[in-house]
Length: 129
Image 1 (tube, one colour):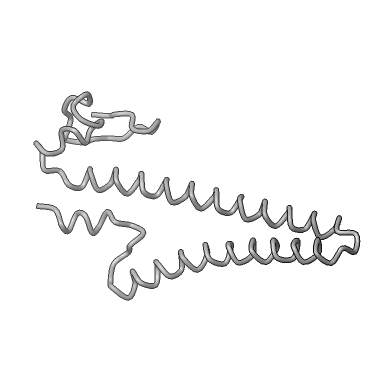
Image 2 (tube, helix red, strand yellow; image 1 turned 90 degrees about the horizontal axis):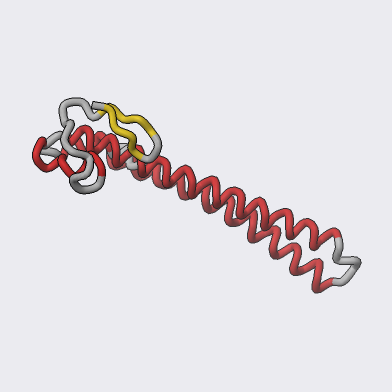
């Protein structure tokens, strides 16, 4: 059975069920004990959320950098304006570094613990019945 979940066609396999029960195909999962399908959907949604948040953060910090650079160029020798623009640029770079380091740290912790934190599908399937 093929269902549309968040504008994507997903093959539900043997689950089937009435999509009006609960939240899409997840509403009927308790009857079928198919943890793999639920894990795949959860991982897909989590991946999309993390991707969107990363893109938004990148655009935001790029915007901060551009505003800081514009302030620096239009300071006209005013030391307070130059200081404010320099601070804004350094804040933008610091934010970008924090985003990259957070991703690297999560991957490093996952490798240290022996599982991929950014791909929870395998973990959920192992915890299932």
